[in-house]
Length: 133
Image (tube, rainbow, N blue to C red):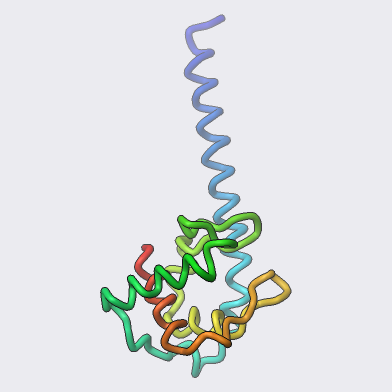
């Protein structure tokens, strides 16, 4: 065994791990982008009335754990095919886009509509999601 075998093996392992992580992120971003493309401009431009408010983020976290964690996980990184809410695509989405997705859902992707939640609560969830950056 040459002196290069171990370093070369470690390099290949790290390269494989990095490639797998990049592939997973690309898959997640392709999964969310079609949903974002469906958001009407009027909804996209809506501002979160609770943006940056600590009490809204806390309330949103509680609502997240009650309604969203089952699919997106306690850490919001997604379980199974559920979108990683910490991903760049989600974090760069406007508050209006996220609120629209919460309200309308995407049944084909397994995301239910949360239109039954009052608008204030949906905005609080958006506040929490945006705080995950």
